Length: 451
Image (cartoon, rainbow, N blue to C red):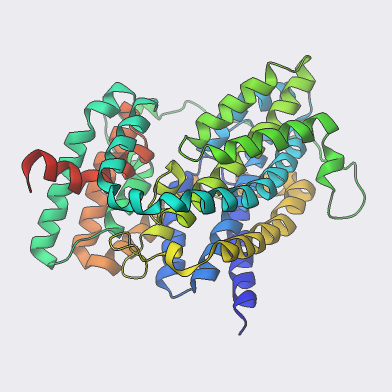
């Protein structure tokens, strides 16, 4: 079978699965992307299929996460949080459907601008790959401190870098003494599902569950569906004004270059810059939403592609989180030595198979969101249990951990998830910081204790 057909089938799978997942509010990108991408890799998908799957999944997820964000006023995932204020403004005006159309049309434009930009920048930075590879321990450590300082946990995140590195290295040493091999999948699965598991633990605690208790069920009022285009597939350039298209093009191009910064931070920054230059509540909200969802797409795509092409080691928040299996999924992909998509695909292949992924996602998720957003939201609200989704992903993480290290893998995953999840929820030490410390832990402990 042609590798292009294989990539097309995997892209189709990613687009369908994550178009549905994106409709479920509050799903964390890392917690859902990591286990499913790992599963695809470990089941033997070719590198081209893995990359097409991931690209289709990312775009589909971020297109359909606009549905709960715009129609119900609840963030589809963490990157949708900055969009809530503007989405609520349009909801109060009775125009949530306008918010939705602007958001996902901006996302489509952002994705197709980010792909070639990221490939070209990755090629350029590849000239410095030897330096980055030889200094990876030091680079990870510096990056951990920078990401920690600019995270919402700030000083708590900075102060706990060394203790968390000690915690990770201790568990690694213990597992090595038992299995005679270093584990990887179990650790970053634990970090990925940490926020989910912490909510369960808080709910199980009689002293802490008050923070999660609600007196009554949430109520959502969905506006009726309206359609302003003919046919099934709308033209995003006709949905947006010329000004919105220009702003989205500029901001998504610029944000594609800043691959070391937080996607949430870049989304907020670009939205504020554009919003401050737009007058009128309606124009400000619609333009900001268009730009912000475009930036969400561009940062996610660029932050996965640039480190893959240039270095082969995860040196961005996305590469350390949702895209981490593309770098490190032992025994298929590894970081030490570098044997991952960086090794198997050329820059041209990253572009071709990335284009297959985002094209398939555009053909599935975009018209689906534009035509059936309200009906899909009603079905999700009525029949999909948030608790069931959480249980499914924790169960999938345990399955993959068992595949790597049997019962010990499950125990380690839940241990890391417990500590990392509570640090995330209580102190604001995000998954990006924890992933960076995970990769830097060996170097940090070696420099401090010579071990």
